Length: 158
Image 1: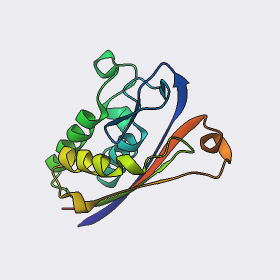
Image 2 (image 1 turned 135 degrees about the horizontal axis):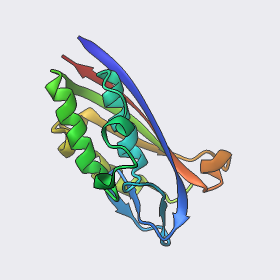
Image 3 (image 1 turned 180 degrees about the vertical axis):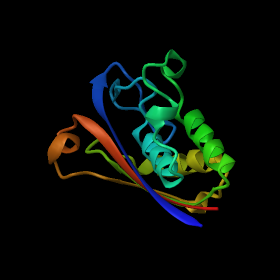
């Protein structure tokens, strides 16, 4: 059985937070994403896509933002827990294709490390993981540098 899932996440950029994407801390003038956990939109989108593909809800169901256990949580650890949830249902990851939407900073230098982090958390080969980054040419909230968003599509199989 093959299942497809789509995930989307967005967080607001604010002063005084670390910018973490794909499990990588990216220097960005003390500006980062606001959230209950580390606000890693890329890993959140992938987590939601995996949970959706397996019909297991979303990350808010499993890791609620009103639970102090997840305050400043490492989203890489949460992604590994999502992997265990889908494995418990008999699924394994076939591939992931994800895109980060950010006007700044430039993410190309960090993409390989993001892919490595995702492949480790999900215990899959790195060539099963695609991560891309794009700007929105100054349009919308990401183009105006108000936030960063991510989309992910996954294929899982039982």
